[in-house]
Length: 107
Image 1 (cartoon, one colour):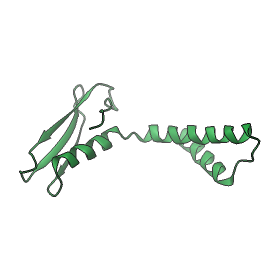
Image 2: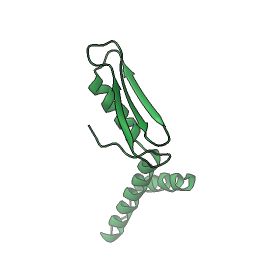
Image 3: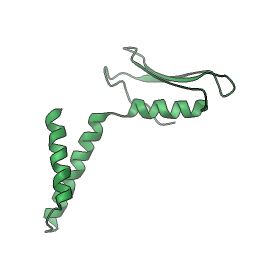
Image 4: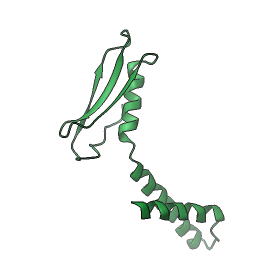
């Protein structure tokens, strides 16, 4: 299992709890912040508990703003590489940069 990120709201530690097992009808994996009680749950009837844990952890650790910042940094690194090597940036790169600028403005 991946390491859990801290709570996106208060920054405190979170913990993973499970209910049921692979032999019960109801399987639930829940991540809950120890401080502000923010929680996220995934339950399943057709999947095993390991699947529930994997999905809830991926969802908890996904932070849209981090993804947008990473995309922006990578686009600007690509632009710097083009200029450093004396290449003309592609139109595709300019589209990425425009998208990155828009995302940064919206933050």
